[in-house]
Image (tube, rainbow over all chains, first blue to last red; front, side, top):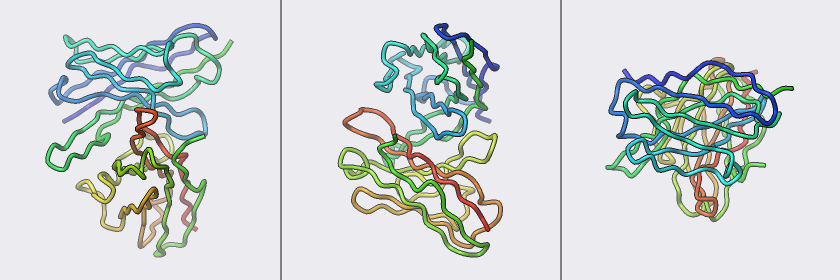
Length: 123
Length: 111
């Protein structure tokens, strides 16, 4: 079965960087884009960007440009999300989510999600 | 502030019908980009409820339905049950941002 397993929670100081990993299993890793979505405490979902695990190509939400880097390691079916220059308002749960594309209906949607990784930014 | 606008909360009694609106603009829903709906229970990751504006994944009860008209979309839930109490999010693509947008989320309370 499809599983997305994320790395454990992190506590970081303002100005530091954090890397969160998302390990895929149960499907062909390079066949599906992977997105990152975050959720601040008591807030809604915020899309951060996607990575194409096949090519390594990325697309980031404008608000994260310059601070966000997504990479993949095809040898271990894992994507990484690194956010730098952390601020207190980066405190959130970070999710990876697989992008399923239905070629017949031209639909796409997030069909599997990781369990979430709590990132806390505090001095 | 999200460009996809949802009411912060809706409520209904068991067995009733509720709708949750999602209002976009000409660069997202109004440009005919597909709308998806996700449901999130406390402490859990979101789960897909509706894709392609109106389609239900297998396993989602037919009490849930999606619709779209112009720059707005709606999620309808009939025969409300206590287990439907959760947060609901709409999602679409925005061409001016070249990225994905989520609505601000709607908390459904079953009275």
